[in-house]
Image 1: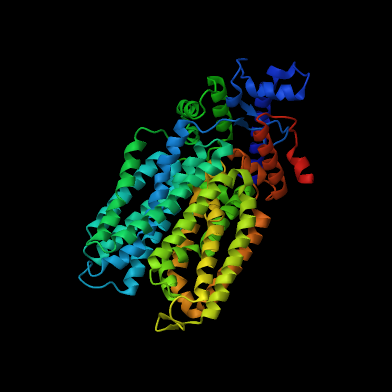
Image 2: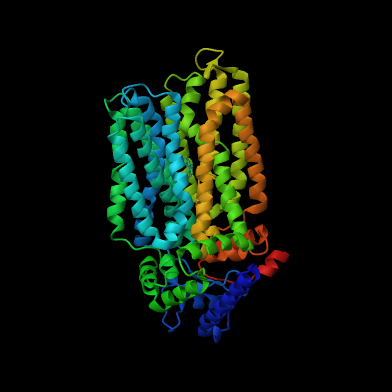
Amino acid sequence: MSSSEHNDIVADDFENFKTIQAGLSTAVDDDSSSNNNNNQHRAATSHDGTTQPNNIALKAYDDEDNTSILMTFHNTKPSPLIIVLTIISSISGFMFGYDTGYISSALVAIGTDLDNKVLTYGEKEIITAATSLGALCTAVIAGLLADCFGRKPVIMFSNVLFLIGASMQCGAHTFWVMTVGRFIMGFGIGIGSLVSPLFISEISPSRFRGRLTVINCLCITGGQLVAYGCGAGLTQVENGWRILVGIGLIPPAIQFVVFFWLPDTPRFYIMKGQLDKACKVLAKTHLGATEDLIHDKVDELSRLNNSIPGKNIFERTINTIKEVHRVPSNLRALIIACGLQGIQQFTGFNSLMYFSSTIFETVGFKNSTAVSIIVAATNFVFTIIAFFIIDRVGRRLILLIAIPGMIVSLVICAVAFHFMGIKFDGGQAVVQSDGISGWGIVIIVGMICYVGSYAIGIGNVPWQQSELFPQNVRGIGTSYSTATNWAGSLVISSTFLTMLQKITPPGTFGLFAALSFVSWIFVWFCYPELSGLELEETQQILTGGFNIKASTILAKKRKQLHNVEAAVNFKPTINEIIED
Ligand SMILES: O[C@H]1[C@H](O)[C@@H](O)[C@H](O)[C@@H](O)[C@H]1O
């Protein structure tokens, strides 16, 4: 299908929405005494004329345009089912964090337990990298799997991989069993890292989507913190590293069992034409909405669900890949999603995560593991702050403010490293002074500021990736971006120590600062504000350009609407906004 054909279809769909919208409006048209009353009435009245409590009204935003006339569950708070689903799917995030976090202390504690000899530096690198490599392999296909088999079965499949991988590591007595265990566990991490945020964003009401998705990030950073904490506590215990790995068996087992009783997302059911199931889930996630309203929403979502043509899975996959590249709005979504994930990794954070102990030891801290916990804790605490502000401040603005914070902190670290005078001798870092110097303190403060600025913005915003893509290419689109994330993580963690040696620590941190600066420019020009918008509206925003201005105006208006809790006098059109 050509892009113009596609756009025609989208335009047709939106014409249909206008009809739905008109249908909703007729119930209130005779009451024209006040626009304010009209809108409040419409927000509170269903097709059959029955009055809804104000806080669960389902209405179309009246933009009179092609952009935001989708029906929105106005004012609904996340229902208990949404909260349970979010928490259970975020266990994938916890495992992502825990399993990538425990390895640094496990490697120290392993000693001669594998092959009865001390692991070489190269073997340690292979064990660490095996997980990222495994994650990269499955990230590439996880989206397609989730589209074919469902989000829930694929998450459950990742649990099985986690269990196999962790059991192999627990019982490993050779380097290769350990490495294969880490690799299989990586398969699970790659799938979970994609499907969990996808699942959450598909079940969330639009105004809470940012926050609910950040819960998954909170679990990632929380998992890393727990891993560092347990690692520090278990290093002296005999076979402590096996206990550390064994703890990782509990969360996937819980997630697997609980998911038996939970449904998949309504949007997945709609993709598969299982409209009844979609209605049932929507009724449970949007408590109080009448059957009529739920049916209208399902109707609307199925109209937007332009399924990809093809006789079999293979043909459909090829057509989906074509669709994501050929349709300009999809391509823009892809550029943003991969760009943000690339920025998340190539600005160097994981080098700190994996090697912070080494860095702190180098600058003179005796208890470097304890200092590393400060890094993980800062990451966690600032992700909590992100949770509170992401939907209010907006993803774009947070990044525009936080990335300069990263740049300044990185430059401070680079300068401090320069004045400390670190040299590399035979791959070993040598500091010219003994103990902790003033510059050592500057480095630690600089790193904490860097981690805080990272965690509040680029550490979690890229995981909002699912909201960028329309339903039919969401799986493949998020596969590309998640794979970018894991490829970046792999490159940075396997080159960081070499970079320190070859281009010196000031050079390395200066390079990350420069990359952060380029990232800020990318965000300024390419990343529209999507907070508060319906998932299906993003595509419209990305049609014809990145439409930054239009998106920020629309998101702002949405926020005002949510704040006054009724649709009052809100009728901008996308064309008016763009012309502005
Ligand atoms: O969002 C997460 C989080 O910021 C983690 O701390 C980091 O290790 C991951 O690479 C990233 O994807």
